[in-house]
Length: 158
Image (cartoon, rainbow, N blue to C red; front, side):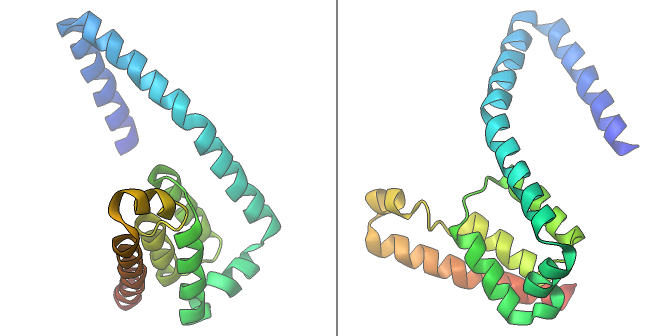
């Protein structure tokens, strides 16, 4: 029911905005549509990739590799995969939810998401150009270590 409330509130505010200034509202809607068009191909590609992976790897395999029973080895695997993967946040969290529904463990998903968001193996060359090699390596190393701290805390809390 809360989703319907949010949609209703959004429509109500959009109508109010249109009433206050038609030109700005139309311009904002055009910008939003352009942003949606730019994001959609990337979003669909990742969703399709995850769907194919979930079709190929059944819940038992996911549970064995990064399930709660996999322990710290599963945390390490999830953190490494997260560190080398380049997925935007708006795709990463639904992906993590799908993995959890298919048998992944909370600690492992915590390590995956934190290393995915904070460690940038793929983006290191660009980062090195701006911040230098030493700072880039240190930042990524500390972020990678921090992902294990996140996994540990999640393991204690959940």
